[in-house]
Image (cartoon, rainbow, N blue to C red; front, side, top):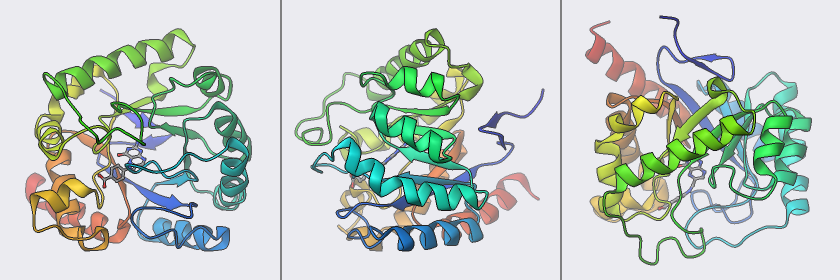
Length: 275
Ligand code: PT1
């Protein structure tokens, strides 16, 4: 069987998507890359350190974050996308807004990474018309309130059913299945227990037939599982959770710490596969 690919990238082994925030209020770095030149520098560092996708986000989606207008989001993201795509990087844009999707694709992004799985008005059409690859993520509720009282009967099962329905909606809108990746949305309307359950049962998503994206980097569930470290002190837990996900089939890791994650993957794979 031919190896799976996504957005032209071979997925015979896990790849890294490096986070590039262009927000004034990012949870993990206090918005230090809001400056677009600084964001471009961060993106180039990620590529050097082994990232194969750069995920550019101009609206923070962490729990409790405030929404941003489409025009502000475009103004922040566009120069960064243009510079990094112009340098040859594969770019995803982290947005839920159709207007931002269209502008980002025009600026050189090839992947839409949507925490709302293309449910906002016009989003399916923007992705289909732009010929984009898409990452469909599950979220319960909205960033402003999603952590108030997350509840599931069976979290992995319900998330799987949601993603199956969104894959169908994409296909009905003309997006080829080969262009679709899926993500259970760690931390998006989930308790720490739910997040652990999802990663430990990640293999239940494999039969959906789309590459699995996993974003655990620096998230709060790590602090709640171990000694309440602040975001920048969560690398150990981030690597542990990422590898637990890879063991169950995750193929694209969305991370802040690219070099460290690449090293962990290389060493872990050597042991697992006796390379
Ligand atoms: C993710 C993701 C994302 N995460 C995809 N895109 C964020 N595809 C942004 C916390 O609990 O996992 N997959 N885009 C960042 N979101 C969060 C969520 C950040 C929760 C922090 C937390 O600390």
